[in-house]
Each structure stands twice: as C-alpha cells, then as structure tokens.
Length: 603
Image 1 (cartoon, rainbow, N blue to C red):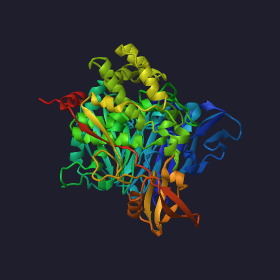
Image 2: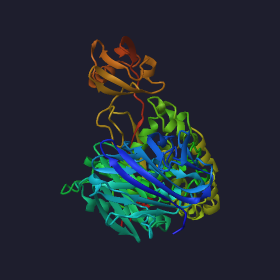
Image 3: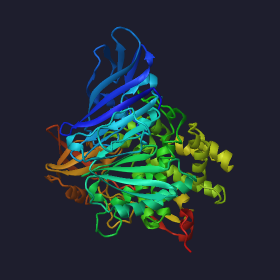
C-alpha cells in the first residue's frame, strides 16, 4: 500500500434527519496548503446541482489547522503556524434527502450516495489511493452494503466490526464513479459471457428476482456480443424502489435505477410482461449499454471533465440517442418482447417527436450543447422551443442504420459503427471528435453519409421515416389523437376531428391547462399555462364535456370558455380546428424484411 492515501469513513448517523457523517483522513506529502472541493455536477446528468450545499457542517479536529471556505464548493486547509504539513482529519455531515439516482438519500430502509455528493476531493492529490469504510451504527448494524468498488487487499483503517469491509479506488475519478448502497436489500446474481451480474433491490423481496434475472440474461449477452467483449468482469444493477418514480444513471461497473415497486413482476404472479415491466427491462438495457457507450466511448471534452462548471458538447445525441435506440431494439432482437410490441414502442417514440413543435426550432446538436440550460431545466413551454436529444437522437440512429444497410447492400449496419467506436475510442478511452460518425462511415464502412448526418443532426428538417422504415418491412400510419391519454402505437378506436393543442387535466374547479402548444387553437384563444377552465358554453367544464362541445362545433366556429386566472375571471373564444395527424402506429407489411432487420431467426 502506498504511504500516501485519502480515507473516508462514512456513517448514516441519523435516519430521521437524513444525515451522513464522513470522516476524511488525509495522509499526503508535505505542503503548505490543501484544497478540498465537491463536484457541482455528476457525469451523465448535465445540470449544475451544487452538491456542496448539502454539507451542513464541517470542522477540523486539529486546532492547529485552519479551514477556510473559498467558494460555494471549496475549502482551504492550512496550518495556523504556516508550516508545511501532510496529515489532517476532517469531519463533516451531509444532508441526504434527494430521492433520485444522482445524489444521496437516507430513509428507514436504506442509505445511498454517489461520491460526488458525499466525498470531498483533495484537489492537489486526486490521483492517490482512496479508501472507503462504511461504519454502521446501532440502527444500521444489520444492513448490507453493495458497491462496484473493489475490496481493499490491505487497509489503513483499524477495524473493530467483524466482517467489516474497506473499499479501494486508485484515484478520485474512480471513487466518484462507484455509488454505494447500504440497507435492507434483496439480491440475486447470474453470469453471462464470463461477466457476473448482480441485481439488487431495496427493501424486502416482493418481486420475482429469478424471473428478472432470466429476462436480463439475453439483454446482457446481446450488449457484450455486440461490442465483442466486456470491459468489466462484474456489474451491479442497483434499484432504489419507491411508490412512483423513474430514473437511471450509468457508472463504469454499475448503474443506479429508480423504479416503482409495484411495476415489477411479483412473486407468484402471472408471467405476462406488462408494459411497465418492459420499461424496466428497457431501462436496464439502456444503462448497461452505457458501460461501453458513454462511460468509455465519450466526447473528447468528457474524458477529463471539469466538474465544477458546465462542460459543453454537441455530441450528446450520439450517446443518449443511439443508446435510446438500442435499449428497446435489444429487447426485440433477443425475443424479450415481440416484433409487434417493438413496433408499438417505436410508434410511440415517433408520436412524441411529432407532437413536439420545438423540433422545428432546435437541432439535436443544439439540444446537446444546450442540455445544461434548456433540456435539464424544462418548463411548460419547453415543448415549443426545444427537442430531446434522447428522442430525436434515437430516431436519427434508426434512420442512420437503415441508410447504412441500404447503401452497403445490407452488408453493414449501425452495429458496425458501434464496434468501430469501441475499438477506436472506447477501448482506449480516447475521446471522440464532433464529426466522428461521418468519419467512421467513410473510413470503416466506405460510405459517404455526410449530407444525411448534417440534415439529421444540424438542421430542423424532419426525416423521411415512412420511406425508411418501409424498407425494413414496416408501414407508418399517421392519425389524429384520441385524447389526452393517447400515446400512439395503436390504430384509433375512436376518431376525433377537433384538437385544441393543449395538455389538460381534471381539476376540482374544472379543467387545468398544463401546456399550450405554439400556433394551436388554445394559443390563439389566449389560454395560458395554469389557467383553470371553469365553464364551456356556460356549463361546468370537464375534460369529457369540453371535448364533446369542441367535436360538435363546426370548423372555424368558436366555443365560449370561462377561465379563472390568478383569481380573475376571463372569457376566451376557442376556435374549432381540424385535429392534426400527429399520432403514429406501425404495421408489419413484410415479416421477412422485418425479421432480417431485427436479426431474428425464423427457421
């Protein structure tokens, strides 16, 4: 063990007040001053979150050492006698009550933290060995601990607990890429292609762990086989269960997921894969794919990002967009879902994009660059001026795959681009340039797709999806929406001829306006987000009644609305307009072409 190291002893000291206590012990070379800092953002989630604001107290145990705060996330450690020094001990407490995959959280069942939220960095020595010991308290003594951090072969700690473990990371970057979960946990493991996968859930076991592992097995195998190898020998799926919630964040050898406990298959339940369970498997697929594509294949600027400020790149559509194609596509390729179910998922994605006026104002490259200030800070009007680099990026990836297949006589595909990205960049952790996709198409596939990639990524033009997917045996159908809960993916059971262009919900006073689409009838009527429609044609407003009146009104005529806005009564005239064809479903016209595209053996 190196004589220089930084050690963290972490304890969940108060569950009801959600407090983690961290004792940092630094054994470092002699110098005049040390700088401590906590990142302002966590890789994979592109928003400044100022994690240091949750450090509620910090002090140095040595009275001969001064601790001075420099800015919102940094402290200076110096000896008061101005002599050099190399050892010091700090103790601080972190308020851990952000129920998300990005930060830190404590409740009665578990404690979870990312290093970016709880473990201070000694800036001048972020490359020395870092050790972590979880110190359990009386009320956590029966908790288990899981993390992708390897167990230390030797330890700088004097351990008093039986079976206590100390974890080791070679540097701070590895440390903060290894989240820690401790608590009442249930788990099961399985092996695929020489990799050991661990599936962990918080709380008591109510879900069918064996079935979940069985369904994840072909997904994990697909990803490893696609890239030709796995960069890790062990991987952790850690899921924070909650009543309602959704999320995932990738790490090099693990992922942290957030999901509703009631949307997972229960022990002894029927074997049908519900839509919500399919979404969980897709989320697992998405985050595991990031093990290669984001955690190792990444933009140049993200190889060593500055975690104290925004780090801009126009490439996020390549990373989140491509991954968002492969997450569900993998489920179809491996038979976890049927081709028909995949068509429904794909159609729902296209529907979301077609209902997004912002796609005409912002390209996916711009969306990627502006993720910090626009995508991650959305409001009710965001749908009108931004496009999701996840969503449109996945549609571009689909179109790119089909283009590659067409131009190469079906001898190449997007899979080949993914393998090139891995072998040229990710395997060696070399960052990708902005034009990497065009370049790889030319150099590795001998295809010139510059024009397509420019239009897809740098303009706001819609792609010819109908023509493209027809070449893989699918037919795209566009129809009117059936109502506010219609996500698309299926033929219409009813036909609506009118549309007001607003997202509405029932309210105790009537109907609440949650979103108004640009250039819509609702916008022309002057409706605003937050309005409560209390009456339509002098009758109390409900979603059903509003739809009935609108449907029975001739095109160009108006429905009188009474609206409550900021406790003021306002009248609006809502024009009856023809409903747009913004809802998609997809049918299979040629099973052979489709199965060939999916790689499904029909023999």
